[in-house]
Image 1 (cartoon, one colour):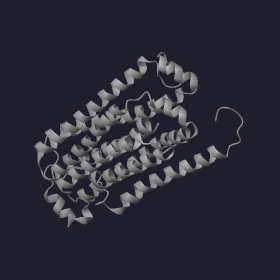
Image 2 (cartoon, chains in turn brown, orange):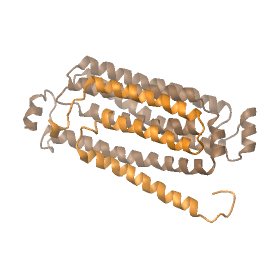
Image 3 (tube, chains in turn purple, cyan):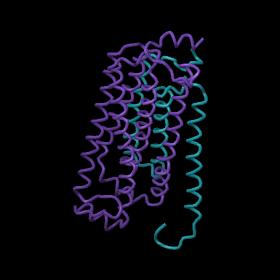
Image 4 (cartoon, chains in turn blue, brown):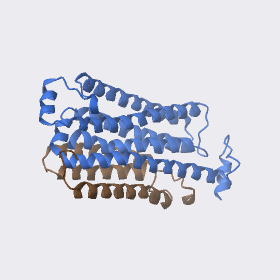
Length: 226
Length: 101
């Protein structure tokens, strides 16, 4: 039944010859994407486990480190990413509705949110760098508050190693996601997505939501709990 | 269509989920101002997990997908817990020999 119904709506898209049906192709793509997400969780997971254990061991040092972060910027980026997750989900919704114009509008908003997120991140990074707050051995604070805390906590650099590694890896995922959304926009302009075929929108969407999911944990861990 | 996994979630549900996520973000920020000691981390992680659950169930369609996807993603969470457990037992059963662990 499903083969018939999907081939009816399949104007333009022909599934690859090694798949039995468009339905099978859709599920294989989606399952592959979820498998990739599983590996992503385990990659970020290593960092999270490290962060949680060291945070438990040196709570005062982590708290001192978190005083250099502005939670308002973190909260702003949280709102931006949550909103972009909605527009990403809506672009799939409108593809299911065969509304090409609204698919494009939502994809453009999602891309714009990615830009806003990275711009805020750039401001945060430059303000850290200007105070000499670099990760690892490059840590060289030259601002009174930072120098004082560094004397109190000689291994303060570790907080920033975690901060830059976790947000850096996350930020690079946002950049990759933005590139993928750009590719979706290009294909959506050509009218390739409709209720019978929107697999790429769905799979990029899953990736984008995962990036949001990781930020949901990063924001309280780095900015609030500290 | 249940077998096809192409269930269409109503527009209103998406909006409600976003509002819930924003409300929970406000709660996260507010709760962090109160001092519960070590429980602050636990509470923050609990709220984050509720938010993550909403994103997974609705935005990522897990609620309406084949249960296979839930199991598959759950396996990642399971092995993450295993990783944490082994690291944790190592961390807290070491013989203290110096200032750096």
